[in-house]
Structure formats: C-alpha cells, structure tokens
Length: 131
Length: 79
Image (cartoon, rainbow over all chains, first blue to last red; front, side):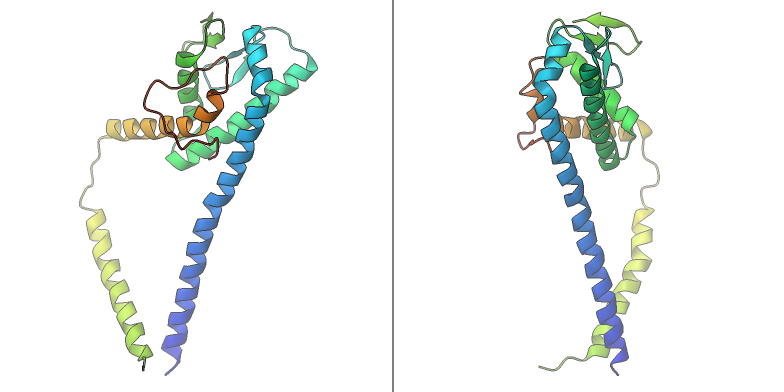
C-alpha cells in the first residue's frame, strides 16, 4: 500500500533537486560575471590610456589589438582584458543561443559606433582607421 | 484528515500522461519559422545582453560612450 506513495515521494524529491540545481547554476554564472565586471572596471583607466595614446585599438571581433609595440606590462594588460571579454562573450552566447564570435562582432559594432575620437577602430573589412 | 496516497499517485500519473500526450501536439502546431526573424531576435537579445553587462563599465570609460538606444538601467556589470 505504501509503495506508490514512496514512488511519489521519490519522484517529488528528484524534481525538487532538479529545480534547485537549475536555480543554482545561473547564480554561479552571475557571480563569475560580477567578478569579470569588477576586474574590467579596475583595468579601465589603463586600457583607456593605451587607447588614447594610440598604442592599442578595438578590432572587428570585439577584442583589443596592439597598434604599436607594447611593453610587457601593457601586453599583459591587453591579454587580461581580452581574456575577460572572451568570458563575457561566451556567457552571453550561452544565454542567447549563439556563438562567442558573433557576440564579439556585435560588441565590436557597438564599440565602433560609440568610441571617442582618436581611438583606433578596425572596420568589418579589416581596415584600421582612427575615429 | 486522511490522505489516500494511491489516489494521489494515480492522479499525478494521469496528469503526467495527459501532458505527455498533449504537449508534443502543441509543439508541432508551428513548424515553420522565418530564419531572418530568428536572426533578428537573437541579434536584439545579444545587443541587450551586451548593454546589460557593459553599460555600467562603459559609463566610466573615456573612450566609449553610453548607448544611444534606451538603456537597461539595471546593469551592474554582472551576467
């Protein structure tokens, strides 16, 4: 007599576990995203300075590219920024059902349209120009 | 208060079977979707997600301006 009820309790427990896991994964992704955002904000003044000096530019894939030879510290900064951008693009791709490269290109278009004068930008055809 | 567990279980199974039979039919009603519309929807979602994440960061930037489109004011630079 108790067997169907036990089956029901088991099924309900499994469903509850699935719901809890489903709630936990977005929270984990959100925490990771918040860490990336914080790092990017802390890095922003240095990245801006390099862009305003014309040492780096925004390429057509949503990443920073060197426009002149960089010091090791500046190269490291650029690599760190690009690594964090890749994390963001990957996360957005996962949320929207597309791929990270497409997200990067969409971001590149945003940057190109919103960048301040003097910043190096690479257009869709690959040509570099200063805004 | 007395629970009749087998009845609850049978009711649950009945509802599950009914849903299992009906849901596939409803999902087959709309079988053709214009791919251009899907692309546009995905593009809009991507741009919205990008704005959600980057608007807080870009607002502190000297080299990237704020979006001209209606912004998503809940942005905190998190995913």
